[in-house]
Image (cartoon, rainbow, N blue to C red; front, side):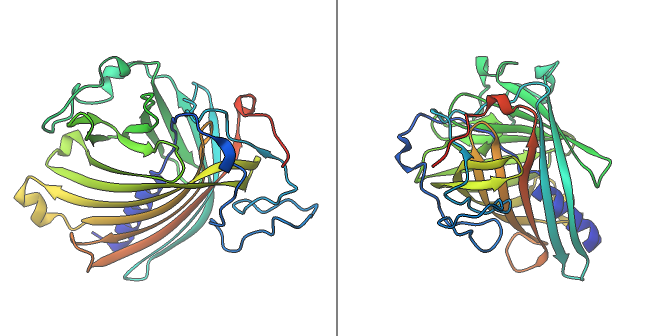
Amino acid sequence: MSNKLILSILISFLCACGGGSDSTPSNNSSTNESTNTDVNSDDSDQDSVNSTPTEPGYTCRIDEPYYPLPETFEYRKPEAGDAVEYDVEEIGASILGEEVDEEFKSYTVYYNISDIDSITPNTTPPFTPSSSWGGTWSAENLISAVTQDDNEAENETSFYLYPNDGTVKQIKSDNEVFAEYDSSINSWLWGKTRLPKLETFTTFTKTSKGYEPDQATERWNNTVNFSINNTSIRMTGIGCIETFVVQSNETMVMEYDDVIDDIIDDGLQKIERDSTFFIHPILGIVISNTYAEGFLDQDSTSEAVAANQSKILSDINFYSDLPDIVNR
């Protein structure tokens, strides 16, 4: 497999970052405090008064109005017809010098699901022990999303579950399905946590698997650590937004049941991904910055490619669902 193709595969893994969530009500005493974690480099001076708006991605100044967090931190499930637009920048390079450096817009439109039973190959994942979602697996909690970048002709279709447990689960991306181990019930369930429960100064570790049903002997084993930190008011394409700052560290390792696949597959065998997300419960991820490295074996001694992606929300079509803009 060429290094250029391997680089494109790693970039596609970067693009798979999505958003959404639910959380319990919390005391908002910390919500006007801002961290100094930047998607870009230098922080804006919050004490200065300037008529020029803060650049997207940076901490908003104290004189700039903003969309606050809602009273409760339950993720809003998108409705059919909702549309979201991001400005995206990707930079990557392989060991042989192939490079990617581009900026583009990414568009996502949400749709109802006509046949929810066709999303996954069975009612339960093929891992032991496993369980179904029961009544939670319903049109009320499921939604599909079609994403297209303006630099590519292909669409990506994903399916999300909003299970009312403080998280958002990604069930499927194109033909790859995901299952996650739930330690509270000692069982595997469909979907992996895309957005964690929003409680400041908490951490979560999730274990999941991803595979294509027609290539079931090959699986990505994923371990991700979420750290929900303080809140921060950040500038986006639609103005300043109060967000939770979430750190994510993910390791993905390829596993085989078939010895032949193990021998002949010369693609990536391990991916390490570090992300910073700025999340609003109604909008999901409004800003993200992700750095990923891809390796040709299952340890970390054969780096083949590395890439960085930043995404900043630039537009939506459901402004009426946002809280009223406030001043500090």
